[in-house]
Image 1: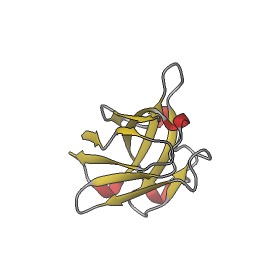
Image 2: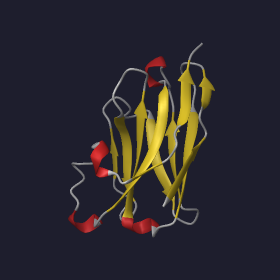
Image 3: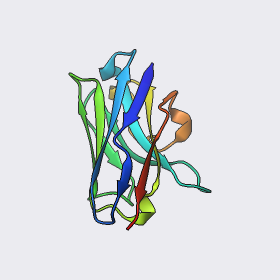
Image 4: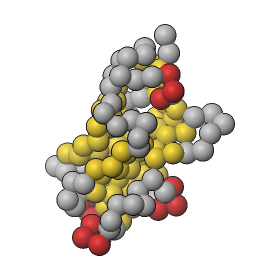
Length: 129
């Protein structure tokens, strides 16, 4: 399993970025893919998650209404569209994958770092004027 993030960069407050997570080496529909972020001196935190089998999505309260997670199953890619970015969004963003049975998963564990077996290398997002 390989996850490769891209799309990070420097953006001004109020701006937008779209992150991509290209996945390979597994059956895409059998997984949940999440975005996490980690700022210097802080713990890694869950940002958003999508269950690829049925399209359920989850968001941290801090990003609801500003970020949108989506997937293109034909390209085995998950996206994180980030709008109205704030300096507090500055962090390294990681995508992570976990194989699960979508039917039996209630979604409550999506923000748990320990849930995910596979991680990308991360992409830096800096929001600054």
